[in-house]
Length: 417
Ligand code: PLP
Image (cartoon, rainbow, N blue to C red; front, top):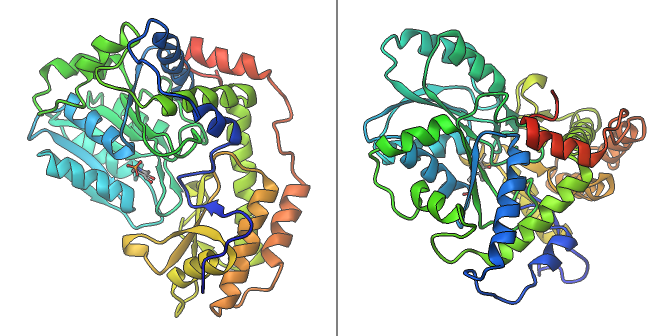
């Protein structure tokens, strides 16, 4: 079938997400001198406001021209030495790739394999930490939101497991598909190193790897022997101190980031988290009540508010649903990756979204499923989502002013508490 020309493409992969027009316009800038005396206004303001998004008052934020994967590498190589031991759970393609990188960089990873559809196994982490009497584990890896399976893990629980055994290991968190869309609290949860990227909750194109680093982790960088150059935090700290970067920064991305932070500031983080949950619940209603299909996430406690991985019936190839949706209806759904390839398709519900945009994704997925022979009733997903959204509030009832939420998060590291 020839590519569709008229109308817009409906982008519902779980990142890159829709870039708001305001952000697109903010990125349409002429190039300028990144060593001018004016440039630090932009860089210091985005670095400052990102701290509020990470909910850290004490940590430092870093922006690298890379993607989330570069953020992983920066995080590991700046804080560890070759041979260092790490504890990590593997339950999806991204937790797998992070472990793979750690192994290729020469760390000794104690892998806890978990069924795909579940998340970080707190009890098994606690057990491993208790057993590590000599504190050989230097870092614990936790993927907050496994984008491949639509599973969110309990990071506060990982912190409790570390604290319960008085374990000094660093807590590394992948917040690539959770930051700015699912509640993430760097200081409250004692996260030492959080990694994110620009193309998900921050509503930008891919191109920035963003890190939140605790003072504890920063203190370890001097002794970390892993080889690094481009990603060396020391160079970045030195340059950022005066508002500059150690190399030519991605200017349009920084202007876009400024505007996306303005949008986040206007909506307020709590309202954003609430909206993501509310939209996700509507999608889940479409899947379970409308289509009578299952999520890859095994239990409600794992359900992700940013992405739903839908399991297709036996005998159907989920890749066909994705392909028909794309070619016939101009709808981009996320494909199943690795172990769940062909078994699931994913609906991303994060970033700049509302109910009716998601209705397009639900209706398109419904049509594509029918086209490939899945027995779903036309309109059933749309009806179930509509029923959910019409009977629930789209914003929190008790409204804290947006500015109050954002600035409180800057000063205390938590807008909750
Ligand atoms: N971690 C998670 C949870 C992701 O979803 C992704 C990408 O989708 C990555 C890491 C890798 O990020 P990037 O593709 O920006 O390098």
